[in-house]
Amino acid sequence: MFYRPEEGHGLPHNPFNAIVTPRPIGWISTRGADGQDNLAPYSFFNAVAYVPPQVMFASTSAKPDRGDTKDSVANIRETGVFCVNIVSEALRDAMNQTSGAWGREVDEFTDAGLDKATCETIACSRVAASPASLECKLTQIVQLPGEANFVVFGEVIGVHMRDDCMVEGRFDVTRFNPLTRLGYQDYSVIRETFSLKRPGE
Image (cartoon, rainbow, N blue to C red; front, side):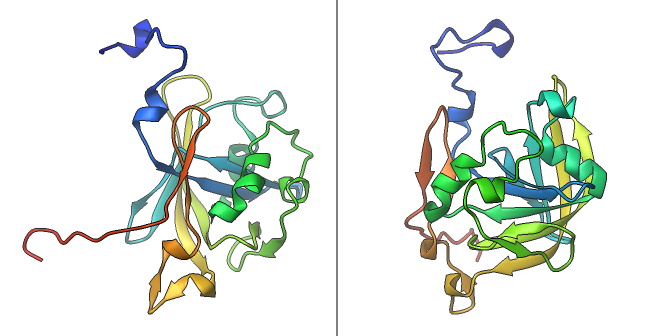
């Protein structure tokens, strides 16, 4: 099969995000200038640089109470900071609860029954139970072609790792089983890993 996206695929559901899988989930916590906390998951998310460490996430829709975007991007525009919380298998239901298109007045931490922890370097809450959290300062927001498509880039200025996820000096993902996003309404969990050496190593 071949199709041109501009002409449509003719399938019952869009296959695009089922092709680009698995994708890590950036559970983005922000705080607005009014002090209101927000928490929302984004599967267009990844690390993009080592030195300094940098991450990105993309928001691709808008809410009526936020104009051209959603709460996360709107809050980051106001404050210039955000936190990325890693989603473990144990947190999947809470993550899903925070994915709703709630009003800007809703605190998703409270709505999903999640305990908050205080960030060290930025004025923002983080998910206390998350296996790792990355405190970030905004570097740039890039508007992509298409309506409401924004990519947020941030420099990681603080890193939290749960002690029980550390094994012999390494952050061990099999201790918490990261949740990953597939296509449609599908997810997967990482339960095992293997190593490969590059040529010449």
